[in-house]
Image (cartoon, rainbow, N blue to C red; front, side, top):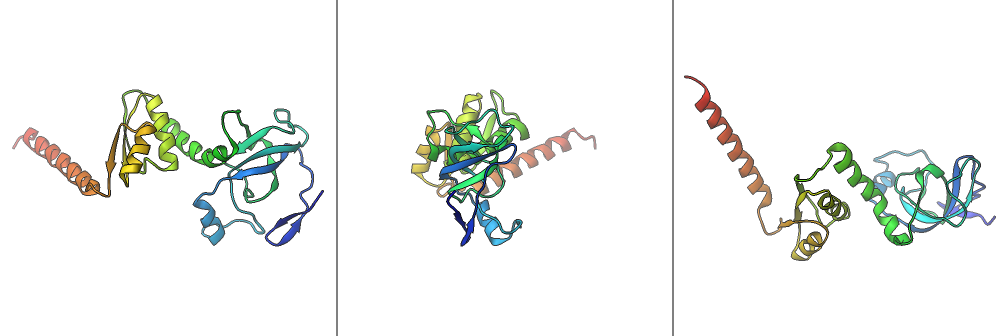
Length: 211
């Protein structure tokens, strides 16, 4: 097997162990957290690669792996670091098979963002029909997925964006209303609105309290 290069060193990849797969990357996702790993803000055991998101093709599987086979197109969004590589060994249970309708680049770019959306609207709070959601950065990677998913669930999404072009993009992906925060004083308006609600509530409570 030809050696792979990693941080200037030759690395012999070897065969997948029990429960592992060896995959050949076709696309790799880049995320801001990769900077934290590289800078040491989020310490990692050295020597270490970077990247926790990618897509590729299964080259070989280890013992005990029954749901994957060589040639399968796969992607992952939460895995041990090492996505910045041509090939890698990875726990097979972190991989999902890709349907024909999703290309490798799209898969590599959406896995972590999709998982983020899932825990926000299905675990942190289970969004339901009739809910109204305020979504910041509605034209970003997470925002574009969340807007579509929330709309599918019957929620109304109000999103903040930075430009008219981003407003169009957000609306095309489930956002019912877009606030352009670079033009509208959204932060101060929100603060004034909260202050007004607190004032009204305190006034009502004072009126109800016998003197």
